[in-house]
Length: 248
Image 1 (cartoon, rainbow, N blue to C red):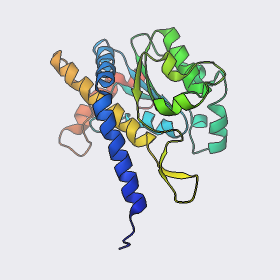
Image 2 (cartoon, rainbow, N blue to C red; image 1 turned 180 degrees about the vertical axis):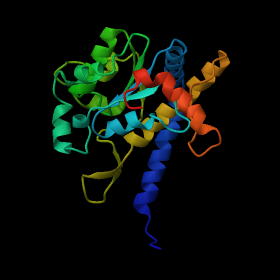
Image 3 (cartoon, helix red, strand yellow; image 1 turned 30 degrees about the vertical axis):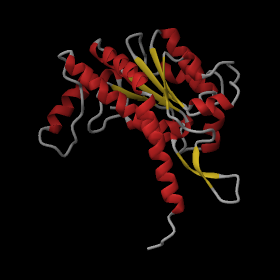
């Protein structure tokens, strides 16, 4: 086995440090996000998740998985993802009018919550999607790097995602996302935002489940397909939320 582990150890330590910072610094914001999520589910609403580029993976993170909410629905558009053309997706996420059009497919209501993942929090599509959600009356939760956003100017909308959102969860990332500097180079490796975004999302969902239980409401949570009784349990949840989630 190769003895030199400097890059791996540096990355893992940097990630652990930032996850610890999230635990220690974001508890109040997570509680607020969880309360908004629990309120929406208790009132028959949905939790929509949206992100462009690599952040779209966080929209899928909460969708149709063991221990996840059936009331969670990803907001997806293939042009804003990476599998068809990464270059095109980067251009589209800076194009005005795209975000509200994508969101409209899901027919969101004022009862619903929209969680937007955008590491920098300045690109046109996330910002305009948040603005459209606010116009509808949705609660908007932003998952961003506050440090990154502070280092760059807003886009054409003139505002940043964190300026629009009702609740902001800081992923405690750095400008540029990658954490580990390379010796003799200006480049860094080891991005944080996906790990930190999933950490924040699942923390808020776990807290929301506990809040629902405290109200006497059984959380609509999927069971792993390999567990006893899962097929029947999950089928009931899919039927309950099918009309509001086009990805079932």
